[in-house]
Amino acid sequence: MDSSTIKVPVELRDRINRDAREHGLTAAGLIEALLDGYERRRRMEAFGRAFRNADAAYSDEFRSWDVAVEDGPDA
Figure 1: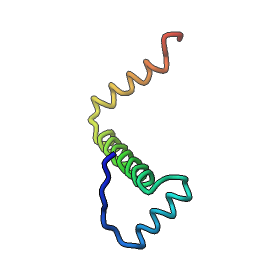
Figure 2: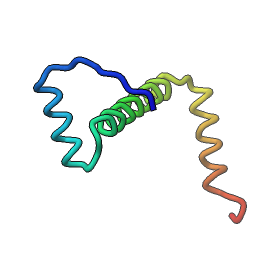
Figure 3: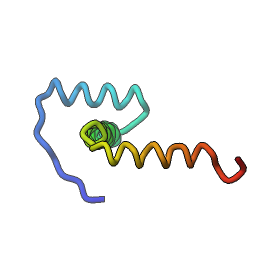
Figure 4: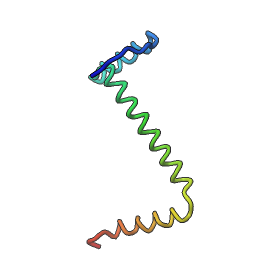
């Protein structure tokens, strides 16, 4: 793994190290987990916006598939 140094304020570095230690992670592991969570939230927010802005045709199709899935092959 390639590593590099990033400059952060001492207070932030200390917070990262403290939280990483509390969760049994390295500083890099904590940052990666936080970034993963942040990126997932962004994707979910984008999905929510797209879903809220969907037109009536999409909503009708979604409901049709939802009913089909509920019926299932054993219904």
